[in-house]
Figure (cartoon, rainbow, N blue to C red):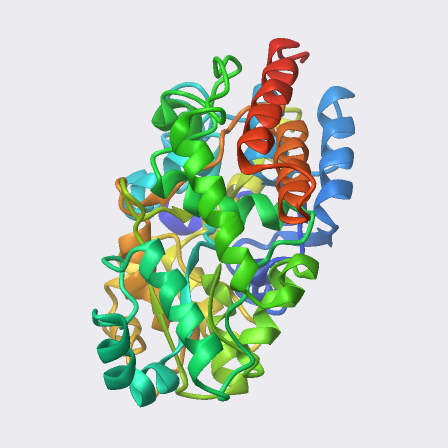
Length: 444
């Protein structure tokens, strides 16, 4: 079968893709014509809030249905609990009757392929689709303006980088609080009683050598149904919590009301000098104050720099019939291809940032790492490339029961920040709750 014929063999079919309303989905929805012209396939894109998406996908998979052929497979809420209902994409990628992956699986950033694509083994259930990652975002103009005075006062070069420590971050934030009226506060955080609080704290936890469970690589990269005892009661975890409480005490007080969507405008409007937030807010930063921002990996703790990864893949429903499955593969393959990821980067509708190594190596993308940039999210590329290295990537536990664990940790952290419980008690109580949750096991 000729290459073009492999793309046209399901002409006239319809593919239903259910997704959270993310940047790449917005860009693809705004420009589906290239896929339709290539394949003759019609695509319906259904965007839902993540909780609603998970509920509908769960019903589809459990009921033996395939209302949704292609699924935005959040690693924690879809992939971990429902991997048995998804197709092993290696079978489709290696089928000579279907077009293979351009560049192969190896063109996806390795840590991302493992984190969003695998669960408990070698099977690949999802192709990396988006890759939001928390990095250090800061007002480069203010750091330049005050550099020499800060350096003299603090005794170190305050320029943000992965070599700065969390203690230095704290001292920089306090310096802005005490020495300039350029901003109201030195730092802000996404510390609302919400998933965002877990994300914000996790960067500190891992950097101090703490973790949610033992064998973080196995539990974070590959996932498991048996994570073992929770480690949040360790000395390292308690030390991280004590530092986090101290850091939030000097941060913008509104931090405890913000998730990532509240924090982002605080930075881009000039209220705070720096913050940890998802790198894909770079485009909005540049739109608000062109040329005023820069990006670095997260600060180091006593053990490492840790940058939480929040990416998701797209998967194929295992209940699909053969023709549906083939058409779904064409869409999933095309939607994550280098050409589509480049088009998404250029899209007026947004588009996120690529999950393919080859896209970052394109000359026009490399040029966009420097201002003036036609693709402002790529201004973060040097920071996120470092963040995605195995030593620096931060991965929450990929376990079927993560949602309950997530609620337990951010509830206790919120109590800690309110002064209702000590850092040590917050960590120990969370560890006890985690163990109760995970000991119940996984009910498929």
